Image (cartoon, rainbow, N blue to C red; front, side, top):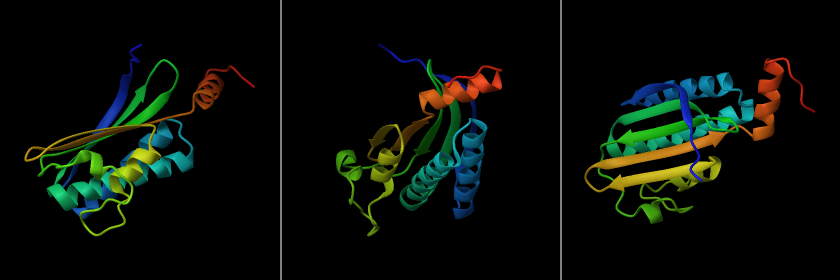
Length: 156
């Protein structure tokens, strides 16, 4: 079964300087709250944006974060897409393993993003760049309850 999803709205944030990371975080947090996420989930989404944007600056020099409000048949979510045209990742499988680092850091970047989000995809080609797509979904019951209350229906 193919699960269809629909983009509700989105924003593009160019990443070229450290301050752009803060802008992307703020926009992601705002989008998460507007989409009905709990504050704790908005923090998780902002953390993911930081990790992806920081990696982008460190390894590619620049790129773009695309933030989208999305929905499927059951719930709503946030999609975070990080796109760069940097050197690419030679060994994607290794790069998403916990503890792996090429920069001497803790190795939480891609593995952390994968762990924090509900869905994670990565595509990378050496010499052409990397695209990371991750999604966080609101819990189904929370979505039904919140949306139902908004429309005057109560589910307990």
